[in-house]
Image (cartoon, rainbow, N blue to C red; front, side):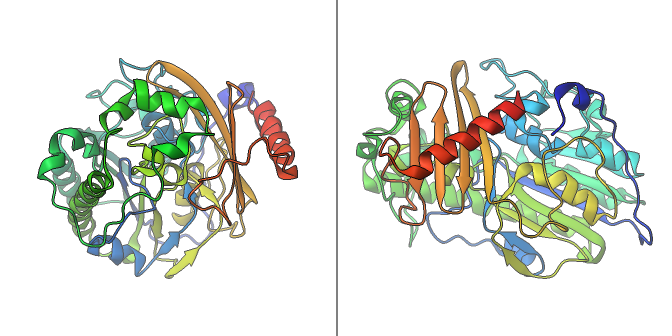
Length: 413
């Protein structure tokens, strides 16, 4: 593990592998607030196009369930605390912008001879500014439709290899639910949440504070039928993003020489435990994200190893026949197929409400350790909905997981 001084001194190099053929194009299509654990059926034909020819990672996790630090992890391959972005970068938060000196996917591929473009929500520095200092020679904001249209025109105009990062806002518009609730038509097959607000008893009090003092106030009177409307609207928004994905894929041209990554920055609580949106909690609905990779060298399959957002940068480089040579906390998913036995996740604050949490998630267990001292321990094989908090029950695995978090935290300092 590199220390901070070594990281700051790190350099980026793009080293082609021997025998590399025509460089493949790269399209990254990223949604905002999309959980991998959908609450019902949705028509996603363009996502299916990718699934039919690529790899679906069933256990992909965001490094942190918040926009800016998750995006920093995706773009740099660094855990949020190492990228220097630990919370949202906006006027209402405490977050610091991504340093332009930090190596990014944009800069990496541009150095390798690619044209690079970023289209859509950025949220890592002042919005509306040029992103050339972050490695993207072309950039454009605007509505989802405007950004996908701009990306499509740009991809079609390129004569050499290109990297296009398309960042759409939906299903983030789930935040419109309070004013839309009465007009939403429930969708067939949408399930209500398994758990409600009563499940917060025995959980860290920060979660209840989110309901009583923060955005959770908007939904704390929701009935099961209201949550079905919430979830129906969420799926409506996902189908809207899938149509935009189709436009981007059509503009990218034949996929025989194109790498495509489909993912999201983080998930949504979806009403489980009575919680909406995102906040000081790391339930599966919030930290599990979609990740699909297609490339000329890949075949259709499903993988169940534990992966994080920091894995994307070195993996995209490898798929393009290059080597990510900057400091990073991820792994090349094309080479390391077994993966670790656990992933470490983190959380810092909700706007200016500082509430650090560190998490270890293994195949069977999850421990959330709040800086306040509160803890959650779940045996996911027996309790996949994270209903029963076993922390403090003298279960021997708790001490083992706490030791691993402490060791990770020490290495991260």
